[in-house]
Structure formats: structure tokens, C-alpha cells
Length: 434
Ligand code: LLP
Image (cartoon, rainbow, N blue to C red; front, side, top):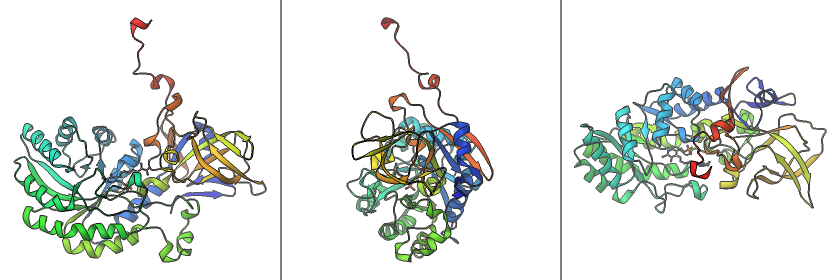
């Protein structure tokens, strides 16, 4: 469920007319709904009701300082994957003492920074990393709390580029070597073994793979609790959002009308399936959702530059491009694209919806049917709140897009569009070229 809907014929985010945002701040601009984030947080945090749960928002999905602060206010901690993300949490005015640090390639400097900042635990992904964490903690004269990411070799049945829990993926220590890795880590003097971690992939649409992974790891978790006194089990993230029917899925009625076996995963179904497996363990549970928290809480606004009628093909050319939203080019991802001003009297147009970047891959949708649109009209890409702005770049010297946060009937620019001066601030032409 989300708060993007038509009021009459104009698309709104909560009580804000999106065309007004586009006119004021220009396009491409990301717009986020605070109420949708809050709903998502509360639903997921409550999904394992009765168990000891800490949500560590996977901020890689959207690390806007404003959203980080919103999450901190809700009681969330964070799942960070770099020194930069850690600095963002601190810059947003949040603490990191309930947060975790993931990733296969943590540098010594990042480990030191995390320990000095008081991170709750580092999630180690290999034996050499455990040795490095031990070394850095020793230099600081303290113990480092760690969890080991275990790779359960489960097929998450999602896109190959976002599957992480198969043995051929670079992540975690294989389940069959995990007990030995813990035993070896227990001998390192500056480590404190605190937990076990898994993350099998992203944009999962069914609970089956989560159940399979937890069933595989639960016996190990029991053993680690007994042998090393671990206190938590981090279940990772991965709950998917609706992309195909994104607009309709904002309404409860859309979910209610679907037969249970065709309904995409919900926090309630996730909780119901996992609770019986997790409750007997008696461990604290960490959830690391990224996409579920923010995916359907954001849209990307863009302006139509041209409708080009080609030979047997129409091209709707927008001012947003693959540098602003790379998911379609990178993962063949589907994003629903809707007009900000709906006009049912217009003819339908079948077109490729593309950006202005000079390569054919800069295409958001092929043979998509939308209402006929012309220069100066606006569209919104739905379900663009996760892995949208964070994956944006500057290809073709296009500035980083702006970000706006809506709450109720008010909205605020939370990240200004990048200026040309900011874009080239670090660059120099050497004197010998002048
Ligand atoms: N925890 C760990 C250890 C992760 O690696 C990830 C995501 C998450 C949590 C959060 O997963 P989520 O709840 O968002 O599915 N850029 C891709 C998605 C990459 C996900 C990487 N890891 C996309 O746009 O689809």
C-alpha cells in the first residue's frame, strides 16, 4: 500500500499535487512519501509480533539524510555497507550503537571507523576479514562484536544480479564451513561472536526461499548459541515490492481482490511463515529491509521533451535518463510510467519510452502503451524510491537529480539538483596543459 493516487485526474503524493512539485523544482526529481515509509516500517516491524526484533534499515536502497532521520525517529537502526554510509547515519543525527556493518570488502579504515563509532556488530563474510577485524580491534585495544554471514545455498528465484544466497555468489561463508569458521574465530582474542547473518537476495516475491534458508540455518544458530553464546539472528532483507501494477497496489482493495496464492509477499505473510521457525530459537532478530521500506514510497518525475514518430515505432523522449534511474537498463527492470495529468479522452500511444543519453540502452520501456503525451507534460516512474537516486550518476555530464519529501499537504526540497560547479568541483586542468 502507498500514498500515490489520482485526485480527479492529477496524480498526488499524499495531499500534494505532483505537477506543482515538478513546476517548482523542475525535473528529473525524486519525490518520497513520508507516510508510506512510516506505514511500511510499522507493518514490517510488527510482522514478528511478540519476538525481540530490531529493524536495521538497509540504507543502500535510499540514503537521503532526510529519510535516514525519518527512520531514526521511527526507532530503526541501520545496515550500512561503507564508511560513507556510516558517515551519513551520523550526519543525519542518528546513533549507530544498534546498527550493523555488512559487505565483503571492508577496508581497515572502515573497520576502525565502525568500531570507533560504536557499531553494534560487523557482519563478516570471510575468514581473512575476521582476521582483519581482530587485528584492527587489537590495535584499538578492544573486542569487536561480529556476526558471520552464512551462505545457505538457496535459490531466491529473483534476478541473477540480485541473487546473493547461492554458493556461486561472492557472499558469506558456505553453510557447511560455517561451524568451523566460528570455531576458528572464537580463538581470535579481539573478537566477540555475537550473531549469525543471512541475506539470500533482493526483490523476492514469495516466502518459500526465506523459509528454506531459515530452516537450513536454524540448527547452526542453535549450536552457536550453545557453544559461543550468540544472541541474535539477522535475517537480511529481500522482501519485494510491486512494480507491474504499482499504481493499483496503493489501494487495499487491490490486495484483497487477489487470490492468496497470487498475492505478492507481504510483511504479514513473511511473519506468519517465519515466526514458528524463529520463536523456538529465542534469539533477538535483526531485519535488514531496504527495498520494502522505500521502494513504493518514491516516484521519479520527468518531463516529456518530444514525441518522435519513427518508422513503425514511436519514441517518447523524456528529460530523465539512465543516469537518473538505471534499473531498467541494468536489470531490465519494469517501472510503471503514468502521466501526472490523466486525460481519458486522449488516444492511447504505443511507444518506446527513452531518455536523451546517446546510447540505445537508455530506454525505460519498450512498446509501452500510455496516453498520448506531448512536449512539456509530466510523467512519474512509480516504485522508484529504492535503488533510484542512490544509483544515479553523471553520465553525459548530467547533474544528480533533486529529491523532495512530502508529508501530508506539505513538501520540501531535501536534496537540491546538483549544480555544474558542484559537478566539476574536484577537477583540475594541470598547469602544463594550459
Ligand atoms: N542486507 C544485505 C546484506 C544486502 O546485501 C541487501 C541488498 C539488503 C540487506 C537489502 O535488500 P532489500 O531488502 O533491498 O532487497 N540494486 C538492486 C538491488 C541490490 C540489493 C543488494 N543488497 C536493484 O535495484 O534491484
